[in-house]
Length: 253
Ligand SMILES: Nc1ncnc2c1ncn2[C@@H]1O[C@H](COP(=O)(O)OP(=O)(O)OP(=O)(O)O)[C@@H](O)[C@H]1O
Image (cartoon, rainbow, N blue to C red):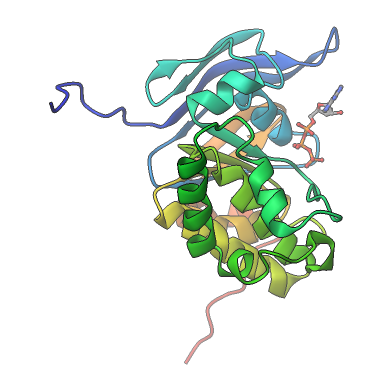
């Protein structure tokens, strides 16, 4: 029977979040970020602005002191990490987290450790193999034998084994050369096109905004500007302040 309840406008809503570590001063100060379905939302901003902290709050690793978190319209503010996964959020941490002495298949399988149904696990494994061809091609290979960019795709595949609504990606380009970064961002777009919303944190602000649908500029724990990523990229003042200088002028014919 079809439900009369309209689908929420956003899959993830972080509203007026205040959060910090222990007794130290607040890191996030009234932060609001919203992720619509089938979109890539990118958080950019200077070192220490609180970008990774946003993802820790969204994944239940850090409980906010105030504010609310909603996933697909449901309030999950007090959920811990396990319950956040059940709510539909999956977090790919900063740095490299594949187990190099395990095969690609074993690494991907770890993402499904909360899933009991073997047929469901096989179905999801088929899905990630289709989405990330390199994962299918290197399925039986030790993950340590893969390049950095390929290992990142194994991490993406592992994160999708819980069938998330939103994937939280913390600096997927870290330690990768520009060519590999381009390939990794192509995979982020494939995730979005497969219907998975993405909240992306990146140091490489210009590159990330070129990939994202929506950009949020974070400074001192709050979002200063948010809007369509192409508009943020075209803003000369923003480029000067946060994107390492003005964009190159268009070539004259
Ligand atoms: N585990 C922690 N314990 C205490 N303070 C922390 C912890 N993690 C981060 N911080 C502090 O929170 C602030 C924001 O850090 P965060 O990593 O969220 O920023 P960021 O914007 O992601 O920075 P970067 O781009 O350098 O990764 C910083 O002042 C940092 O020192």
